[in-house]
Image (tube, rainbow, N blue to C red; front, side, top):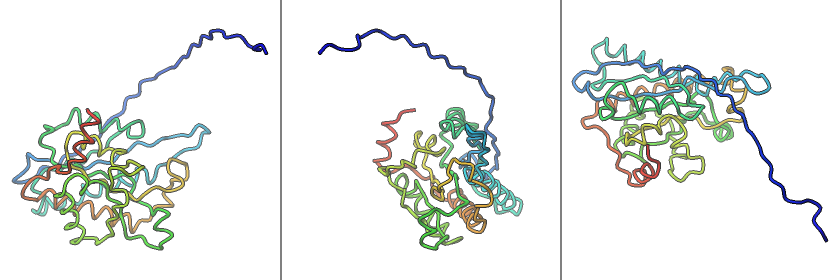
Length: 266
């Protein structure tokens, strides 16, 4: 049986138009007291995916409006503490990064071009989606939780400090469900904390879990659970104070994480 078609070359030309867009990280700085040369960077991304292909607006109330506003509240609390004479020993940078949804671009740029010497950055605390309750906890009828990624899989000191901060403040369930370097979701490197972790800077990432309208128009302010949202922001503040005032800077001491970062060079 003879072939119906004969092989023939096909030439394709693909055209793509790129339009550069100017966008900016927003950096705030609160100077510490007797360890002010060392710095904690608190991050949240203020960009979102914008308008869908069908023209619908994606407000991104939780992703990451919740983190953006949450770290502003932390900054305000830190400023009030400093004005009252009980500010943190180490300095704190409040960093609103851009371009997270396009590939962690803003945090990548900042970590490559920091406003302080990178060796002076002792830790990153990242806040990305802390305003809602995921389906697992809705089914349980529970709200008093936050997922934490980082800590024990990177730095035992950071893990211990978080436990202390939580005991002193909100007493939330610190859920470590996703705190696994082999978790299929790979959340440990899917938000802005990764660009600090890849440089050997220990981090903790606060997260409420996913929801059905993640990256959809339904991520609206009406679905923010404000009581739990506020408690999570309070925990971030309490944790920042513990890290800022600890005697020695935390170190990355999990060999598996060190191996992971070596496998993903700068």
